[in-house]
Image (cartoon, rainbow, N blue to C red; front, side, top):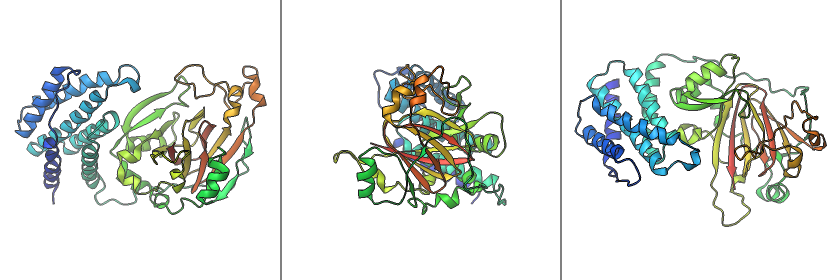
Length: 411
């Protein structure tokens, strides 16, 4: 089957989504936006070849983009996010429709369609399955062409996982206790219910991710053309910090496969919702079914953390239980109990209230004298190990190698 036939099959599978639910009228949304969205829907159905069709869709996305980027993200209207997701789906379908009529610069336009699908997934709400399917099918089409006849394009990750005589500046804490695959009952009684950190071994070694993700080519072929948010700079509390959207392949080429003066970190991203193929390589640990209340459902947030050596998450706490699971490379984690909070000098702003001003690697005791009285724990996390971090426990995380971690957060 040639690429055009593949493209036709993709178009047919996506076009059916256009009639799944009609466009609703939204009284609190600019009616010119709704009008253009309805008009675009009609023009796609009728295969209107005018270039204005894609321009109308982009106009909708541009208007809604301004709304999405005004004020704090938590205040963004769900209706605007839904319109953005639907507009993104329309854009994907329209690009494919135009390619069926004129396939010049095919790969370039396919990548534009993948970007549109991912932007809908990242910034919108609703239409998740449709956008995810679109991105997956289009990615396969691009990758089949770019990797055709090629194999072992990139070497696998190499690691030195031997126990090193580590010597770190700043704070050194008492080593966190380590257990080998404890029972649910034992873990609940001695750690979960008491809010005590513990390192767990031999709990996730059966994951396919340990073999697959160490193959760089697998990651590139699975995620390469997809858009991901990348943090730039030393950490989110520093002035040099920023974020950008880029393809996974570009992120990998720029920040992972070669040394770079600047740091790029794919941090706290729900990559497994965006790319379900990767989610099949991991399993939610059974400990995540534990809860303080019998009524609580097992709703787990799964995030990816992928970056070069020396990426840092500054000292902070999270409100949920956390199992930080290491797949590639090593990390060092410094922890403080919630009882130490006053000695860690949290930021006073609402945005950073869960982040400390002190840096355990370079403590300024003149500015933060009480920090000297704090008591730290420490964990060195290797591939195949998990660290249980209880709610509101402060933790500073530094990668010692190229590192890929998965965090499981639950209440």
